Image (cartoon, rainbow, N blue to C red; front, side, top):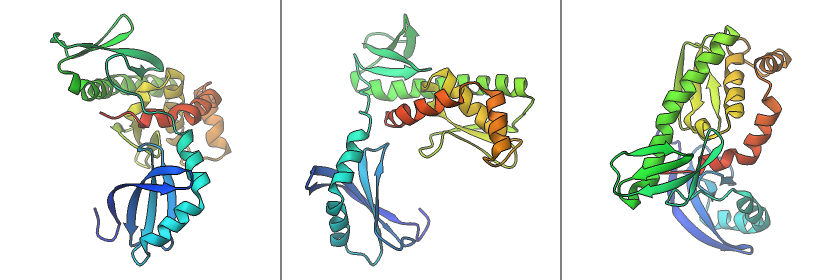
Length: 239
């Protein structure tokens, strides 16, 4: 971490009027005031304090807004359990996880279910590795198809595990996609790819940009609605 950027303490369970809530404290040299937010991925409150601030002042702010905190945490989607009998999405379709401890095939999709070999304690890790591998194959292929159809050619594609955005396009023509998109419906993937391809021509979100997006994909409204309702649940999967 760069010097002065900030540091984090451990997770603490703090009692407030609405009940006990998980809080992660962050000390930041750049912060000018105490602030708080809910991390939709980790499912806890992040309290950021300037270096000179007291933790007691942060606690006072947290407790003064206990209703907002409770409502925000309650709105978070439950984290899926990557275990035998659990479910994980792939291309927007929920796949039941089936543990096959005696098999020697790694992870494979068969009859609509995701089979996982090996010890039970490694199911979550293996499922996440499988999803990343699928993303490495499917997302570049789908980007190439849409790029050829649109005549807009990115210089490269990078897949990352980003929390704040599903994709981005840099001025050198490089496109980044969050690999977790492979779990979303293909219509959502189509929209995000079209969005980033449109940035190759318009590096802004002006009217011409949105006109081009709508020419490149018919799924914009549907995809935006789906991401608002379900996007956080994809980030909450961990292995």
